[in-house]
Length: 95
Length: 92
Length: 91
Image (cartoon, rainbow over all chains, first blue to last red):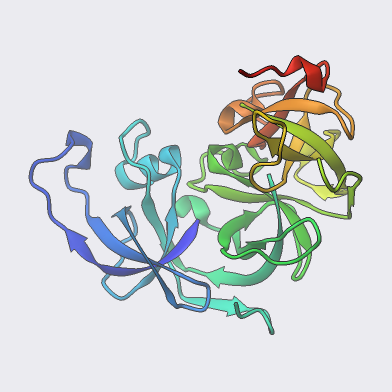
């Protein structure tokens, strides 16, 4: 899983049926120190994440699909599966 | 699988119910000589690994095949704590 | 699938029970000229390979198929040993 910060969401009316009622969140990949990496990803929300939250994103089809829609087999490869409360880094572990 | 080093932990209380009770660790892949690579991944611990230990990390859907990980939405799992790494051939 | 050279071994006593008894080897993937490509990886052995041998390996969930496929967490498995370096031909 990766850590990311929720920047916002996107709205798409015309989309795959399995995405109905899904919240498609625009997220930026971050380092464990919280620095943005500049890489933007989309992920379906399954835990009521909000803008500004640091989140955990699973990037695997089955897990993402079941988290976001309750069933496997959708064309979904990323889902937010947790809102991060805090990150503890060991001493001297900054990049 | 990759060899990685544990560098931190993640706490998330608002999460997918199938992640309840699972320990989330930040691991950084290392080279065979023990030096760090760039990047990191958040992995679920299945073996009780401790800080600074070198571990084996399995990625992708295979991570769900580890014991106690069935039906969990994860893409990386720590499946072993490394005792030794022996490299016999340095240039292949 | 990719060609690789087995370059070392890994010992891990404390591991997920689904990996008990499995041999862990370090492999370096190779290109068509048998030159290294990419970083070394840790693989589970399904072919009886040893250090120094030229092998080929499979990535992804399919890597668990040689074993109890629903119970073996591996994303990298050695599935065959190439007879010799000379048995790799490319034009």
